[in-house]
Image (cartoon, rainbow, N blue to C red; front, side, top):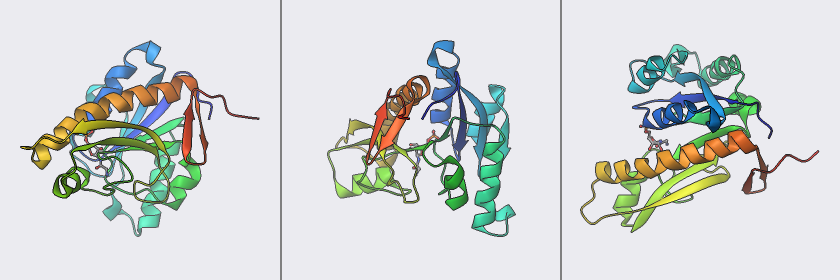
Amino acid sequence: MTVSSPARLVVLVSGSGTNLQALLDACADPAYGARVVAVGADREGIEGLARAERSGVPTFVNQVSHYGSREDWDRALADRVAAFEPDLVVLAGFMKLVGESFLARFGGRTVNTHPALSPSFPGMHGPADALAYGVKVTGATLFVVDAGVDTGVIVAQTVVPVEDDDDVESLHERIKVAEREMLVESVGRMAREGFRVEGRRVHLGVAPRG
Ligand code: GAR
């Protein structure tokens, strides 16, 4: 996939937005090759939106309960995102699954970051599930979003140890430090160099064929 320069990013958030902040900070350097053109959320009053506002980035909120159906919400979200003409959509702690309409428009250029090492521990509770299972290492996975739950083609993974005295919060915080670094590094490369998805692999820095 070729991208414009600097690449236009729309970031979707549901919470504290520390991954968003890492992207905003990276984008402050023109050499990074991307800029956040809008931040969307599925709820009001979150720190993620406040971070965008402090950076002067336009925001929008599409709340599922304001729509007649999940499909209507999904279509409206896709319209909202499309208005900002993104090269890449980044789900950064966005706690909703996007649906068919969204993927019809942005499939192949939407990435999500998940706080576990896929294919282990998909879903909403990656750090808690890893802790409960007793794994010794876990981490975060950046993937190209598909119709499944955290099943998309993997762009990057980062590994962190699980310490004996970890609770869910301490483990998630350790994951998030590594996750932010992975996200900034990978999104930057996708933006600057383009990427191509072939089967279960993402090739960064490879010009598209044809
Ligand atoms: C991140 O760890 C992200 O991987 C996770 O939420 C956190 C958001 O943190 N996302 C999911 O669990 C999605 N299933 P942030 O709001 O501080 O960026």
